[in-house]
Length: 620
Image 1 (cartoon, rainbow, N blue to C red):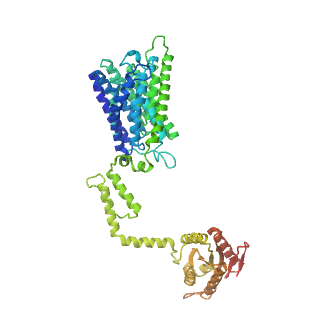
Image 2: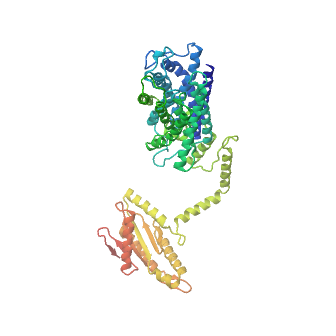
Image 3: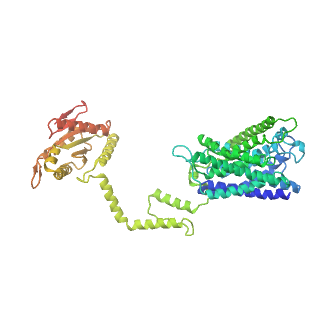
């Protein structure tokens, strides 16, 4: 009994190992939630497994289910030690479910599922395979009577946990951002912590397999050797496969390769020869990668790899045990393998079916998934009110962005890890405050130049397009038309060729100045590009617009461009079109451009109006 008690303590290390493994594989905003769930596993395993599960599993008068027999009734010390050992097995099964649905499952939902698994689902499967013999050897479970073999829980613990986890993942769904548009792998918080957890799990596994013999004798050494050989062989084959596939060694496949090797040995560790343990581990290690790819294909989000490691590994271990289990009288090897297969199917149907149905019911009462807002915030805060300093800092920054007060300082605990980051940020805020007036002036200057032409100071093409869109919206909203005029300097190329580009620029500035100064106050004047200008005339009919542009043309004709050695007569051609609620800015600009082209073709120094009734344009 002392050996079994010692192995129970080793299994407690396994619980700590899974806590570290899961905490490292999730984001830091959810790590405390993982810790809470692993701690509550022990509570549920000892209370509810002790109250309901242990009796259902081992106090049986039939081959299918045990009886209500709470373990807290002053039992024989041997049964107490046996209960401690089995309760740790139950806690392991529960915690695996936690890891699969980490980062999005509600704490209350997880407690509810854990109670059902530890109190009913896990014990019933355990009864079929291990149970009943505390009352009498003849009351063993129906699978055990068929000859089903599971030495230390490849099916009872690992496959059961895997089937429950799969049902939970299908009901709850993947994490936000894991799949779909813009989705992808989600970063872990600490591979180092996960590796430490893995080593603790390995230590606990020695108690898992070593204690399942229920006695201490010479064979324990072989069992422990087989356990280590299976795990290391699984890691070796997994790392070989990652090199073949990715040309580099990947940490998580290495971790999971070792764990699936341990799972594979669990089904038959006491009957394997060391070389067989190596073969089992080598075959199991690569399982993880294709199963994980299959889950990704169907968008099933398994955070720590429960299905590839524990479900697939448990099934493989169970079937593989059929190849080495001692044969009963008149039993063939095929018969032994068939019994193992029957057990796999029976456990799958019951565990997955029962857990899926129970979770659907629980989900109607207690939501199994947290809200999207809580998931994004992190379960540390939303589920346990644990505000980490990083989260506090991010919260303050988010509030500043939301209110637009981006130059407010943030405050964090001076002894926290975030203090240096906050301090540097506040120094930047101080710097911007000192340069605020200069920055504001530079900003206004940048905004001006982004919307105005540098040569003429008129609106540029970008601002013109924005103005056209705004006027079109107003035209549709208030059913008020506006006039658009496209204006082009006549024979501008000749000016450039004769007098040079400097004089050409002055010619553009000359025309721009006249148009902007002599247009109506409500008109919007812009340089459309090159020697071309555009005037938007809001709330103006086609006839009124044409008349105003004609007036501008005549005024410009009377105002030549004069310099020290040049006197240039400037004229313009223009096309005028109407934009109303039924037209678009693009069509209106095209009509005005067509009219401008017609004015040029008709001899220049004139305007042409685009008429709506006929798609032609008429000169004025």
